[in-house]
Amino acid sequence: MIPFAKLTIAFAAMALVTMPVQAQQQASPVSLSGDVKAVKVITEADGSERIDLVEPGTIIPGDRLIFGTDYANTGGEAVTNFNVTNPLPAAVRLAPDADPALTVSVDGGKTWGRLADLSVTAADGSGRAATHEDVTHVRWMLASIAPGEKGRLTYPAIIR
Amino acid sequence: MNTQTLLHRAIAASVTVTAGLALLAPTVALAAGVSAGTLIENTAVASYDDGAGPRTINSNTVTVRVDELLDVTLTSLDPGPVPTRPGEAVLSFELTNQGNGPEAFRLFANPSVAGNDFDVTVTAIAIDSNGNGVYDAGVDEILAEPQTTAELAPDAVVTLFVLVAVPDGVSDTQTSNVELAAEAVTGNGAPGTVFAAAGVDGGDAIVGTTEARAIARGSLVVGITSVGLTKAVSLRDPFGGDSAVPGTIATFTITATVSGSGSVTDLVVTDAIPEGTTYTEGTLALDGAPLTDAADADAGVASNADGIRVEFGPVPGGTVHTITFDVAID
Image 1 (cartoon, helix red, strand yellow):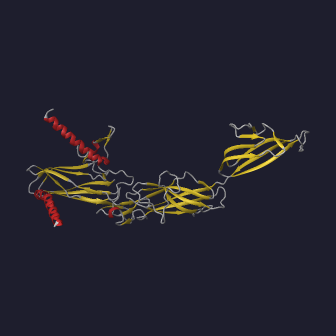
Image 2 (image 1 turned 90 degrees about the horizontal axis):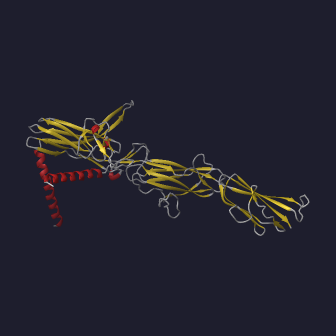
Image 3 (image 1 turned 180 degrees about the vertical axis):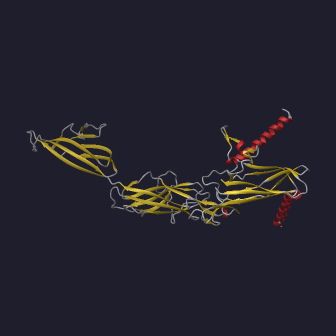
């Protein structure tokens, strides 16, 4: 009897958590789908190098990953002020060749701008220009997406 | 204080807390990068306005696990060849786990290195258990066969001692090298070699630029130092000749020759006054410079009853000292 009772409670708890989320997702006209690829440099027989995006197999510090998010407006109406915010996992840093026009934050999402315009304050109060290693979030801002419109947002990262 | 101010204060406080949390985030600063087994989880959040007001949705979370990098370095800690003589000698090495996961390393000591003047016998490999950098018999753990370190954390550094026996019959200035090799227990080989599912939490292990193996060389140099003493006497009789008659002054010259590549410590030369003679006070001299007979700051002491005694302290090889003193034949 005791295990059965526990099982019932567990199911009830799951239902409570899952239900509202599903309700919200069903109603959303916008879908977001994330993925990650590893960047692999393949040396051809003739010595030239080719870059492949592959499913991450064995990955170690220093390896390069591309995080992607596919979005689509599946509803019948345009949506406006479409902002996609992506906190960087702590174990990666933004790759140095990321788009310089990308909107980023170096303070946990408090302030935003192009990396070149941002600075960080050290513990002793001195300031310095922000670097790719300081980036905590990236953000894309689209004024609107039309019904049926879809697209893909990516950022390159390197495992710390 | 009005409500507006209170609200501002509340916002400021919450922002501070957020920033604090961000700083605590585990941005691991290991030499080898983030630890093996770390999960990299990425989720995007979208906000938009669909006409009915602002809304927020999350993407699915994609997760990848950081695999284990196998890397090791090994260096000799001895500043130069370790001076030695037949018997026990100790060579010191430092091993660093340059990988990003916990890893043990198998150790191999090879005393037969090409070019050796002689080969030592490896008696044991020990870990510097008390971390003082010096081998302490009975304190530092002797590794059992097969000699393997404990599992070392990423970036961990251990000092290893290779204990060797130098054979009898070696001669001064002969040298011998001993090689210590370390290999990651998970595996080693060409950089990029993958050991599937052999890493942390069932992830892969992959060999890094060090090939997950390392070799370091320690060397020994034999320093055998010997002391040779020669004693000579010259006689001067009261008549200007060199016969041994009562009243003849005998001058003894003791030559101490220290030879070899090492040095001797606490060299002391003593000599008794021969029977039938009497020490001539104030005649003790070292390398031509007089020494007082009394026990004082200088190196020498002399008396008729106790003879002469000269204390040199440490003396390097290749040094010659001369002691002279006079006696009168009774």
